[in-house]
Amino acid sequence: MNNLKVLIYVESRYKVDRKRIKTSIANVLTQQGISAPVEVSIAIIGDRKMRGLNLKYRNLDKVSNVLSFPLNEGEQMPLPAGVLRLGDIVISYPEIIREASREEVLVDDKIDQLIRHGLLHLLGIHH
Image (cartoon, rainbow, N blue to C red; front, side):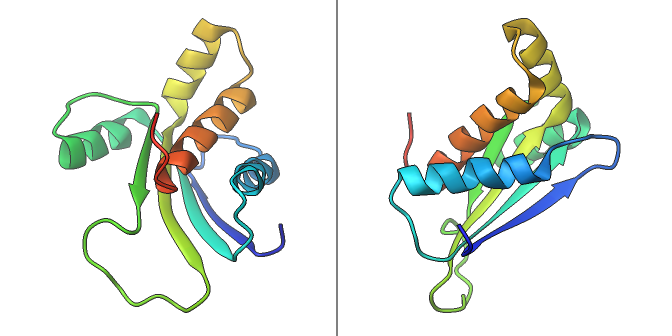
């Protein structure tokens, strides 16, 4: 999917497969029939930052594995025509490692699962 822009922020101590993340996002968008130019951002952070985001935005003092922040919530800002800016997906890397270990799955597979989950939320599809 050439018209996909994925902005990826990873705290330096975490190792992720950026190409696999982009492929995972492209696969979900294709499955959902979305072919327009899309932009989405992914942040891979630690537990302390995730707890802070949960406290600030959800009033929960805990770490969660993934949070989604749709761009269409809150204040509207001018956007370039023709680009579907979905928003941000934030993942706690330490939480992913714990969950992958408990579930006996690969960390990359767990990241794929949560990218899909977060992206579906950004698209307005809730479980």
